[in-house]
Length: 77
Image (cartoon, rainbow, N blue to C red; front, side, top):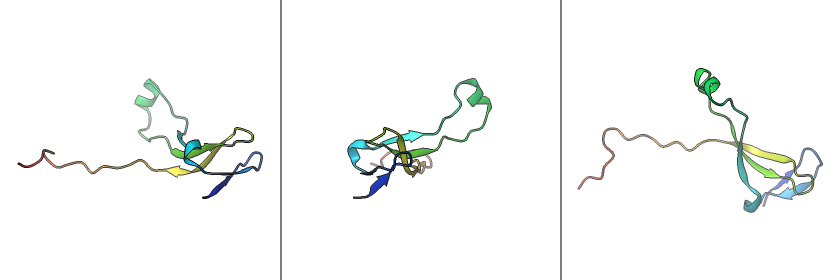
């Protein structure tokens, strides 16, 4: 199992599933977002340091992509 090191206090801790969550960059909301860019916020695999509580972003995370069906997406009988 890989260890993660907190950049604030230097504590190393295991990257376990129970501490994992997905975080995102700050983004504009409401009317400003509608009129602005269509870029999506960056997503990260994140953990909280058990010593100081600071957020540690392990790596960036890509969204899943599903190829759209051409025409109807129904099962052929």
